Image (tube, rainbow, N blue to C red; front, side, top):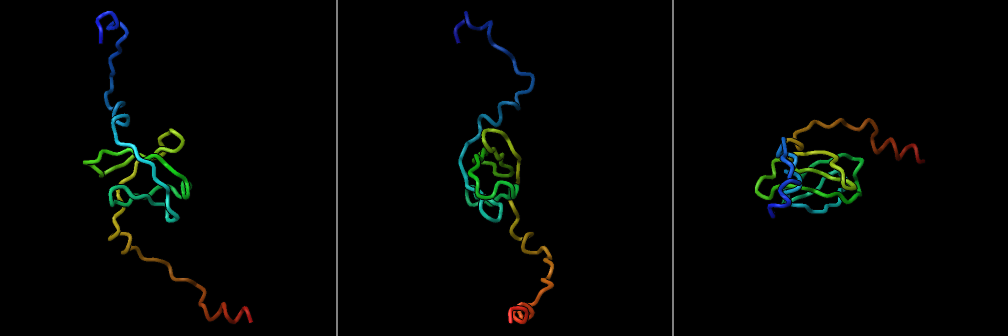
Length: 106
């Protein structure tokens, strides 16, 4: 920067404002299960984004959290999904049996 322009410099009170600007940016399509994949890590996002292309901002050496942008605005910050924990979630059993459905059709 040239000295004559130094008067137009402004100091940041909170340098963390610059953080999102310095992250890697990639476009991902949100899958039908409301997840995206970044460097072989799965992240869960809002179901509202299913089927949309979103911008993902992240530090390549630290995938503990990624930022999700939709149409230029930050939507959320998300952490990797633990597939082991997801597998252990107890699911509700269906109240309808297939045999009951077949009987209704006849």
